Amino acid sequence: MFGNPVDRPRSHENLFGAYLRHHRQKLDPSALGFTVGRRRTPGLRREEVAQRAHISPTWYTWLEQGRGGAPSAEVLDRIAGALMLTDEEREHLFLLGLGRPPEVRYQKSEGVTPRLQRVLDALDPSPAIIRTATWDVVAWNRAATVILMNYGSLPPEQRNILRWLFLDPRARTAQYDWENVARSVLGLFRLEIARAGASAAVEPLIDELSRLSPDFKAMWQDNDVRGPHGEAVKHIRHPALGEFAFEYSSFAVDGRKDLSLVVYNPTSQNGAARVASLITDPAAERDLSR
Image 1 (tube, rainbow, N blue to C red):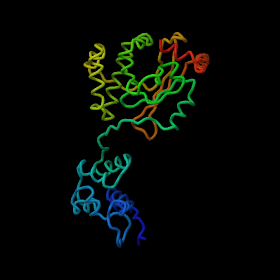
Image 2 (tube, rainbow, N blue to C red):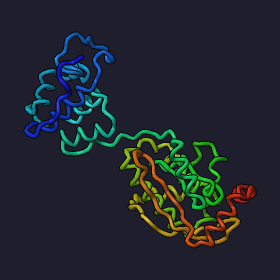
Image 3 (tube, rainbow, N blue to C red):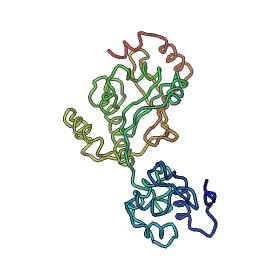
Image 4 (tube, helix red, strand yellow):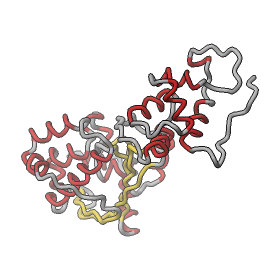
């Protein structure tokens, strides 16, 4: 047992130092390979955090005491790792220590939870997808399958919106004013990958599309950047429904900065009923794949 409870920040203390101390005292020394012995307070000692972060124990002590000046981003990254901070905790550490968030670190999405899939399924008959910052579609509902694309029939590496838009001839047939749609999508894509720190991750995709699609290559070289539409109306040509209109909206997924939820809402009750009828029709997927 430790003699003292975890320290609480007091009003006269520096918030940065108090934050460091709070997370230091939450860690289990034995789980991290340190001898417990007799300790006056719970958690790691300052010199143990410094050891894990590969910085001077004196320098770390000064940081907790508010005497060390502003640390570098590299030092904060090391301390965040030493304290085993989550992404959100690491961001808060940077805000306290440097007054700005850390540079974005892109992490490839591994899919969605069953809870998110249930959210998508509950949105039928509105087509809904979840896409990554690199515009890979990682989840969808039944309405999306029969209206937009049978994503389940594609290998995971082919479920990319840009790849479909520029390489699949059906995209030009389905879109009204294909060129304007393509430019808008590409401008937003460029903005989102920069925000997500994913520019390096999409280089193979950019190279592939530039090689296979002259239109993509020309538009990409224009370096056009466009912001999100928020809410807008999308018109499509569907094999079974003919000309059809959807209001579409994009939402951030709570707790998943790498994902966006996109919902296509039929603009009329009659339209929703027509989509609902397709959802139960096994032939709908075959029609869409022609």
